[in-house]
Image (tube, rainbow, N blue to C red; front, side):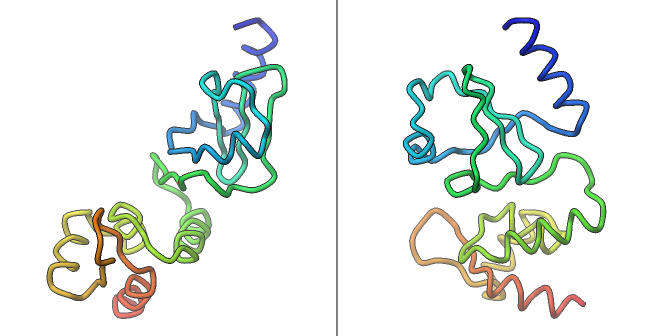
Length: 141
């Protein structure tokens, strides 16, 4: 890592960017015409993503193909509302995403699925319909 890249990364981290730890669909690299996806190093300040893996310093125009990452720290109310709105646009949610929207534990989400309150997709892995999460959110209000 050269000194310019170190300065760039340090500034981005100071500006609120974090290392991106989500799953990236291979089509993202095809869309960006990336020659060496194994060298990719992504940082994000959701929904802004930057790759620092090569000289091109790619910044995708859209987030298709990037897994939505839940925040590590306690988000502000506005950030929380924005992330919930983004998650509710999906057709199905992972248990962690549903737990984030409902502000409950993942175990509680799984219990709600077992009770039939939240509707799951038929095939594994466990995915929950965002419509059932919306309905439960309205019940909690």
